[in-house]
Length: 408
Image (cartoon, rainbow, N blue to C red):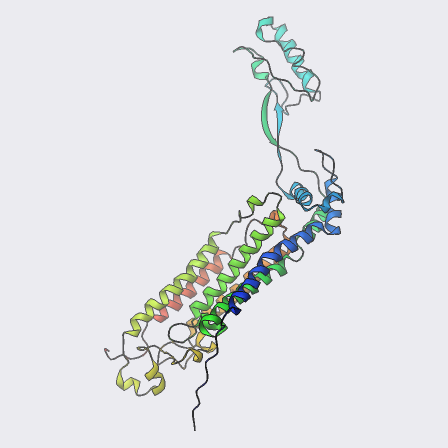
């Protein structure tokens, strides 16, 4: 049987790669403002904003025509969905009632009653009686007079405090419709960003190695599971953060708060676990690369695998020989033809975790508008513990030599 050598694939040459990357980056930059502008200015959104904004008490309600301007629409959405505003309000002294507004009367009447009580108790004109201008009609608060120490009116002097203005009563159903209208298409936008980032990684790999999946292949020409799970989580988290930040940058009335996105410590721990496996695996492999299989044991193994092996580790002669089944089979010469249960377990934990987190991201971006999009979903301590145990078992299984060495 005559053997024929397969020609290696050609990498992307010339300006093809820069042009492709430029197009992908352009798509990443243009999609968020288009989606945000459409959601803010489309007719159903403007109608809902105008309807909910009629309940305001601090100014004239905005109209649907005014909402055609994106900045006006952003400001109205921030007023409806944002936190309550802070405003200055007068606080009255101990002689007033507990609610600070008197017993059903206006503040000027309470202040006059307090002054009369002090006068009846023998207070002279020098004790700081309120001027008639100081006790005026409600809504025209003036500067409080300077009161001597010990005056009974000192405790009743008006003070300025900061209080949150009560939010207008909003119809929950209409508010839910507004949020749904503002978040339309955001889930598909995140999915597109994830695909674009994955394609960018594939293009770089194609340029350097000649294959789109080349970034998963290690120096032994074997597809690496630790590389696979690191790439998966990197693409998911980076695409989620970029989508949230870009939507907030174009959807908030104050874009300076666009990057204020909370990432729970569990997400950082997830990336730490993935990077730990990526770094620790080559360290463990280096110890096995310095060992040689026992000649008697090597005689029972595949001669081609033994000749191409790297110490007692399985290696392949060509980069093109890397295959997807490398993610599940053993890494040593003796275990190359068997399924590695530790790798299989880690693969499925990674796959299930990534699929579950993708569902959470789709639900988040599909239901939460940019004004409330300030935190990425968490994984939960239970899943993080299981994933950590799986990684620990994966690394621990690598430390055991299953191929008999010449030193044994």
